[in-house]
Image 1: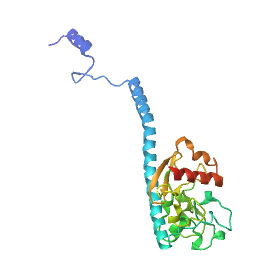
Image 2: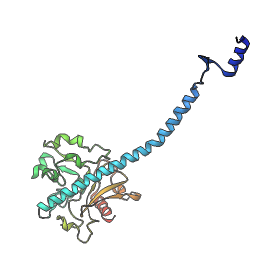
Image 3: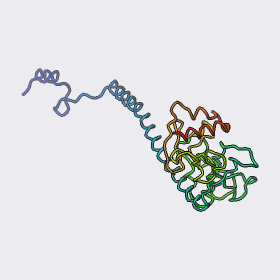
Image 4: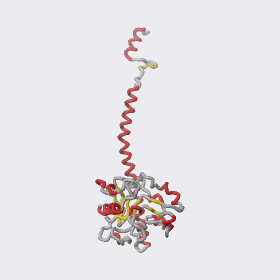
Length: 255
């Protein structure tokens, strides 16, 4: 039989016991705090990467949207003797040119004429070439020009509708309102006919570049290196001046 002295020596050597076995050491408060700090640092490192992945996915969806718009434009031109949809904001002899407003898809009721007020790219929806309202909106848009804001009006209710994609409304030279006339010395892959909104800086969907639809129906990514396009845009809710909008289109043409 073990003596009391032997038991005390064993306890000092092996520490407290549970059911005759040495107890395992637990986590201290310091250990827990250090673990939480390490996890916090890892999360802070991952968040920018997750944001980049999300934006890349949004750019892909946006590219798909504008590609569908291009296909609908081709179908429209095929049925209208090569003519593209007209817009009251570009080269209209009765109105002052306002190329920044070609994000408008349907006019206010008091301004509505034919096609139930559909204008520009909106005529693709009004003519059932592209019967999907959400396609006209970029998932990267951070302002209030969203499908949900105009959803009631998309349901054939009267009212103005604005989208996230800019429509050129014609080719780079005066009078070029037919799809083949858009070119006029510019190769099809360089002639831009639609792009992410350039109405003003907050509506420039991706901020670092834009998806651009060309006359050959290809879609490319314009990387705004040095901010040559975004610097042209008004930094507020007001529309960008005509000359700056036209300069932005020329940048899209040349890339």
